[in-house]
Length: 224
Image (cartoon, rainbow, N blue to C red):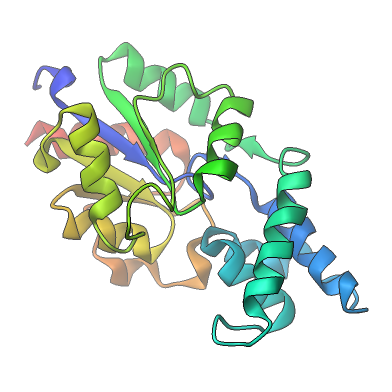
């Protein structure tokens, strides 16, 4: 196997490292309550959690970005979420072990999320990830967000890795598109939200049904 310091493992955040859906669903139901609507079941909102405000406002209020009230609703949603974004949020079971294993084998790892920095950075700290995390790239760190490769290329540049030395893991089709466009290997976190998509059609290099399947997949992909 390669000397591992030559590899960087990048993770999406929501639905890949952290199960943030409970708090995002709460914020979506607050948006409904403001309009006198009954709360939606968690199961309806959970699949949209990787798509942030856009996905949750679509699921919760059937609202799209071209709606005249969208920007105001989005801001209110983000405010509600910021007020209460740690109550139900945890690392997925097995993620702490996975990150410890990466560290033990000399891999560096970081986070590339479409969550804006002012929400992402406090959560990364709250979950105890800030110390080991080599880089955190938010949705507003670079001009373009995923599926554009810019945030991933920024993370690689910032940590001194070539894209070919990097691997990106995510649970949304945008993550795999961004990873491929950046010239990185890709793994689907199929235990995440996946937006109801057919993951087989995303053409990633590997698929992990649990966080414990990620490490063997990484070893396989970097062994060649």
